Figure 1 (cartoon, rainbow, N blue to C red):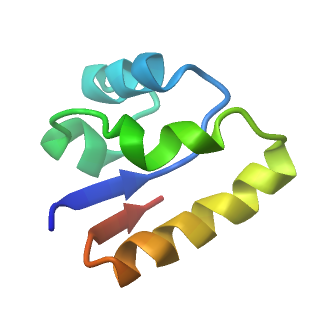
Figure 2 (figure 1 turned 30 degrees about the vertical axis):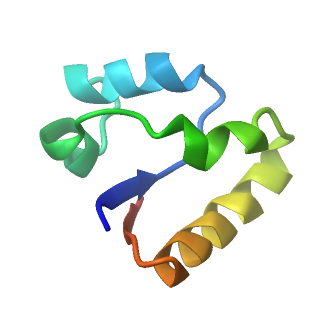
Length: 74
């Protein structure tokens, strides 16, 4: 299974990924190693309120690890 970065943002995920790649408020892992987004892993969760998103970020990381993904979270 691939390595994935799990984070939360108030921006459109495509825009946030572009910002990571450009080094703007970037996570180093996403900036240096990010290849593409995996909408099938996150789009059913968007949008959601901030507090729910904070909890879901942790839960999604745990779920993906159980499925065999390597997960990087900031």
